[in-house]
Amino acid sequence: MKILRSMTGFGRSVRHNERYSLICEIRSVNGRFLDIKWKLPALLRPFESRFEKTARQHAARGRVEISFTLQEINQKGLVSFDHAQADAMLAELKNLAEKRGEVYQIDYNSLLKIPTLWLGNEEEASEELGEFAQESLLTALMDWNASREEEAKALKTDLENRFEKMGGWLAQINSMAPEVKENRFQAVRERVQEILQRMEAVLDESRFLQEIALMADKLDVSEECTRLEAHMKRLSELLDNAEDAGRKLDFTLQECFREINTCGNKVQDFSVSAIVVDYKNELEKCREQVQNLE
Image (cartoon, rainbow, N blue to C red; front, top):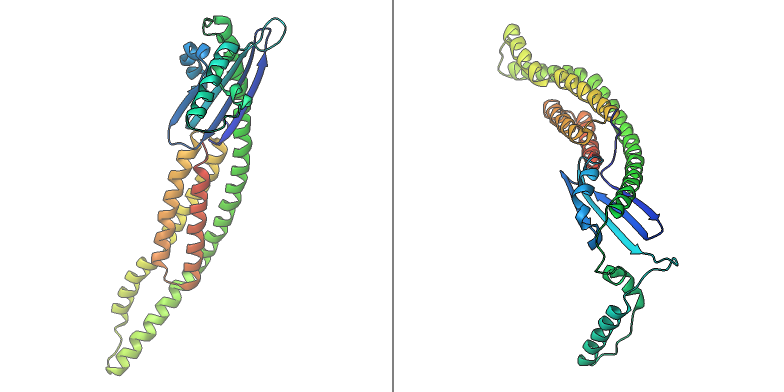
């Protein structure tokens, strides 16, 4: 059974062996389709297609950024560093500052962010390194999925509470609509009789009933309420099923909006209209939430 997940999440893995120190981080946000961006050091670029295939097995939608930070460790457990290249870079920066008439202050921490200073360019990618990075990626993906599942649980609880609230409002509309319709009929009847009295005419009861029947059809929201109840049931089922839940929930919420909007147009009553407004506002909040679901 597919697990409900949010599209927003973070995952991280840190791995070491006798030669390398490797950090893999995954960040993701909402997206209509699956879009994966990679930040790879030079030694891992030959394995990008392999990593891409693995990552796509763990995601369906969203904008995902996956980055690797790789450092080589020598036999003594120290990180190797290209001193000559670093000296040349710092010298060029000093010359630039002098030409601009500025004082140059060395920020050694910035050197940590330059991968080429920590790995020799003469080194070639090995299958052993690819497997090591693949294991790191899988660990980060598991951590990422766990964070997305945790957020999805919170989203599901919030949506269930909102669905329950809307179900209560729908029950109110169902109970109020017949009385509103009857009051409207009575008001129309009294108004017609008042006009006929002024004209000294007699009410044609059969004709009046025909008109009332037409009005009844225009004011009746039983079909809309029935469809809304079915949609609300469908929303709960989708939350439990989780298969492509985000898209399906969004579509069903749009259908709910269409039905409740029709109810509001048909039942011209202040109390019902207030409920319809609250219902539509809650639907919008639900749509915002389901945008986060995969």
